[in-house]
Structures are given as structure tokens and as C-alpha cells.
Image 1 (cartoon, helix red, strand yellow):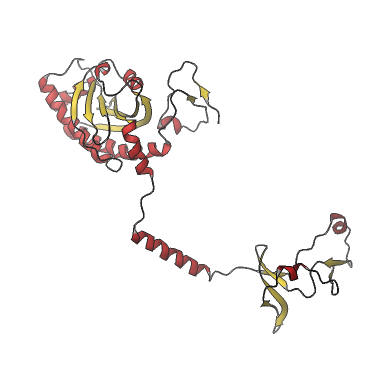
Image 2 (cartoon, helix red, strand yellow):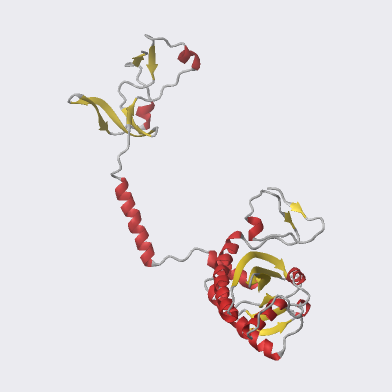
Length: 332
């Protein structure tokens, strides 16, 4: 795998959609910002925020009484300055607490989407062309109840990762004034798409990576095994071991291996005698998958050939050839 450094020093675009493309193209890598959000952690966040987008769809649809949908786009790691620069100069930013995590989070909804929501909730048509201005006191009260419902749904969706109780701590219209973290602090950005009457708006949630990472690592760790699970596993192991004892396998009874050089092997003709390196007094090998596990002597049982398993000789007795009774086999 090749890594290409960005010549301009700008952050490289990444995310779930880029990593799933499978086109094999090299992804630019910024060595000033090492990747810390693993794919496993992204997968955990994706499962949580997939549930959030489904619940957010219900919240918007019921509050606006119109056809709405929320879909997950990417989950990415960025610095706080990069995230702020990606937002519109004037937007609706809701700042909220992330206890017990350190730091604060932000929910960004474009100002025209917020105005459209207020228009719908007041009985208007909710047209796409909305004024870009700060909300009045009445409009702020209306939209704050909707945002509070969204934050409650987020709390339920990521409860398996971290049990936070988000509370709204402020609202900002300019991203430059939303001092949630330092410019170089690493943040986890969840980008979504909000659709209101077929009009698409970008929506995002920003969470502190330093506070979220320990909980992601704990969620990705294997769950502790209880005494009951341990007993069930031991019982399953014992049952598997007992059943394997009754599985039939094919075994072979054969002489020991004999090494023959290629010249001798290629010159063999019918009637030649090939000397075997198997002492006349040594038992035959009982093998399975070319592995000897027992020894036996040749015999018969009725009209059928048979082998009688005998005690294993010592390695010294087995390795010492008996030249007084050589064995040979006629090549046919």
C-alpha cells in the first residue's frame, strides 16, 4: 500500500463513503495528523448513529407534519479548525454538554433548514427560500424544543457507547464564535443529510475525540464472560470432544518410507526387486494423514486381511535396521 503526502498540506478527504469505494486509488495522507479513529471505532459509531438518523426522521416528520428523512453520510476525524471552516459563514449551531465525557459537542443545522422547520411548525408552506437572519425569541423557542428532542434521541442511540446526558448550553450563528475546543483539537464529525420536502440540507454533529475515544475502546473490547457463559463453553467443549471420538477416519497400515534416488527409480522395470528400509522384526506403521500414531503386525481375520495393534517400540529399536532379514518387494 502506498501513501501519498499532500503537497498543499491540506487535510485529506476521508470517511466511510471514501473507504468503501473499493476503487484501489491511493488516499492522500497528512503526516501532521495521524489517523486515530480506527475502522472498528467507525463501525461502532455508525451503528449508533444509524439508529439516531432513523429516530431523527421520526422527530422531523412528526414535528413538521411533512415528509422528512435523515441519512448518515460520513463519520470522520478532523481538527476543530477544519470543521469550523467547512461550515457556512452563518448557520444555526447548538452547543451542548457531553457529560461524563470531557469537552462539549455541537449540532449544526443550516439556517435556511431551521427557518423552513419554523415555517412548517407555524403552519406555513416551508418554502426553500428563507431569510438568513438570527431567529427571533419566538422562533428560538419553537426550534429549541425540536433540537432538544434530537439530542434526547442521540443520547438513546449512543447509550451502548457512552451514557451522556446532553444539555443545551448555547446557540451561535457564526462558527467562528463557537469556542467549543482549541483549533488543533481532534474532533469526531458525523455528517448527515436532512431532506424536507425533497430539499436536501447538510446536518452534522461534532464530538470531542479525546473524550469519546476511551468509551469507543471499551465498547470495542470483548465483553467479560460470566460464570454461566464460562460453564456453557466448557460444556460445549466437552460435548465436542466426546463426539469427535466417534467420528470414523481412514487409516493406513504400511511399511516405513524408503528413500530411492531418481536414477534407480527411473530405471525400474517389471521383475526388479526394490529393497525396503524396514527391519524384518519391526511392526508396520498405522498412519492417518501421513502421521504414524500406532504400530501393528500384519495378519488375517477370516478371509480378510487384518492388522493387530502392538505396543510402540522405542525409537532406538525402531531406527536400528535388521539386515539379517531384509525385506524386498518385487516391482510389478
